[in-house]
Structure formats: C-alpha cells, structure tokens
Image (cartoon, rainbow, N blue to C red; front, side, top):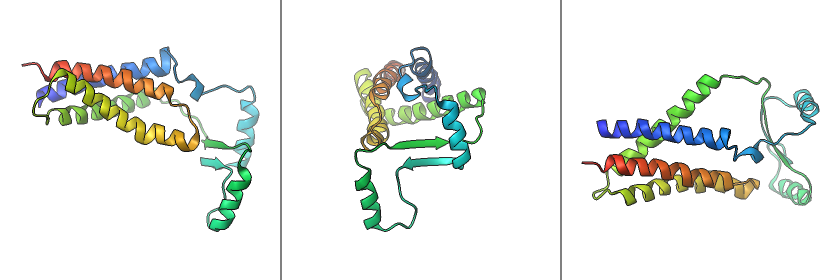
Length: 179
C-alpha cells in the first residue's frame, strides 16, 4: 500500500507538472483559446442574450419533431456553427483550481497504480505500455470522440497522452518493479 501511495503521489506531481508545461510554458493548446479583437462586443452581446449555460448553434428547441430537427440540420450544412460556454461572471480561484487539478491527477495515478499492481508479471515495459493504454482509452473515448462530432483539434491532447502517460508509466515502471 505504501509503495502504491508513494508511486501515486510522485506520479501525480509529474503529471501535474507536465500538464503545466503543456498548457502554460509550452502553450501547445494555444489554438484552443484563440484571441479575437471583437471579444468585448461579443461578450456584451452574449450577456444581453444568453443565460449562463452551454449552447450549440444552430439547434432546435426542446420538443421539436424529428422531421423538423432533420430539416433544420440539413439547411444548416455549409453555414456557420458555434459551441458556446457562457458564464455570467469570471472567477479567478487559481489556488483551488490547481489543487483540484492535482487531486484529479492523484486519483488517476492511484487508479493506474492499483491496476498495475494486479498484474502477475509486472515489468517496466508492461507498465509503460499499460500507462499509455489507459491514457489512450481516455483520449479516444472523450477527446477524439468529441472531435469527431465537434471538429476539434486533437493533436495537442494526443501529445499530452504520449508524453504525460509515458513519463508517468516510466516512473511507475521503475518504482513499482523495484524489489
């Protein structure tokens, strides 16, 4: 149990640091947060026309018939569309957000470590490959599937999986297989 916990704490710190590099210092996700000089005008318009929530445009009101929904979607092909996450008030709680991010990383690495320790013949290579497998499962079923429907960019997230889960796997492969 001690070995699992130490492995998870160190692994979560590595994962958290690599996430910081990806989103902060190296900024490989910059295309996911592009700037527009019209942001003040857009935010003002949204504030006057939306309540806090998540929006997909174009869509139809709840209760619209299947036929009418299909017609609206067909008429929308080739025209602009948008996804909006609108919040009425921005908060800046960096400390709590960072803590929550690290706590999620700790839980993820704990779960991975627990799973790895169930392997009968755990070795370094198996640990790295299994870590990548877990990372790829998350990437494929969440990030990539969403990009199929919403045409998002997946290359930065794919790089995150390869690097972050590779490094965590290498750490756990060394730590968990030590005698």
